[in-house]
Picture (tube, rainbow, N blue to C red):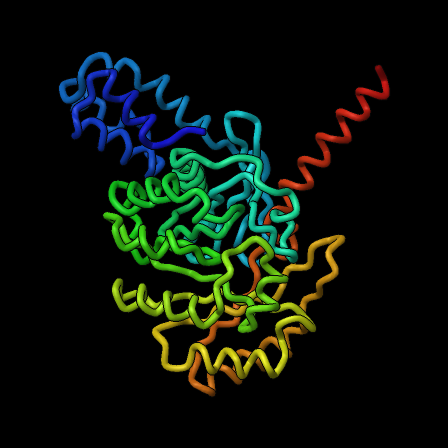
Length: 346
């Protein structure tokens, strides 16, 4: 696992002063070559640092490499990203210059409708590996918004995620409200995020207004009553000036009932909030179904009419194994097949 602090220490060992350090980090995060402005560079940097830049550039590029790219009809593209130790994560290029990044290899929350949750937690993703996902994406297209909604639960890797957010929100040139921290809800999030130099927008995975059903859908998430979670979100929204985004994966026959609609109105009407309703992306071997678009649209329309700002969002990349974790799962299974085939030959 590589952190931004590891890179800072390497630069300082080469004689970098704060202005040199910031220059290297800025160019890297913005996917620009380290030898930009070569003439000025020759007189600006210590010789040892200047001589080390080619190798440093190679090492930074190796933190996140493109294994596969799957463009979708909606303008998004799912990326399978290789890390230096051979592990893989997923990033998603989103329409309108957005990027979804992963903060863990796997996930410990175990959401029953999520492919990533089936694998469990493999390891944490370092802050440098998170920024490297952004740098890789920027080598492909502009990125002006970064959402931490990929593989993993950001609150379970809080130090590394906050370090990445601080870099992206400063020299990375991403607006603070365009950095979106998505979580199932953890008390540490509400303590730490307000203390950061960069205060990101917050997205809370709600999925149901019933505490008993939430415990079933998110079996290892903190046992927040949905009302208490919404109240904590409202305090953060008022303190930062950014509305809370509530995430609701709409699953047919599970959380699309009239009872849930009433619960959403009760919890969110009058709140500084936005409901993002996302019809479920079907995952093979899981017993959950996507509701019809007509049903999803009717729910969103009802909520909007009753005073809850609601956006019905099409899940990105449904035609290219859109469910989070599916690209990695397919790649891992392919490796298992190869190993088994080689063992059979031996």
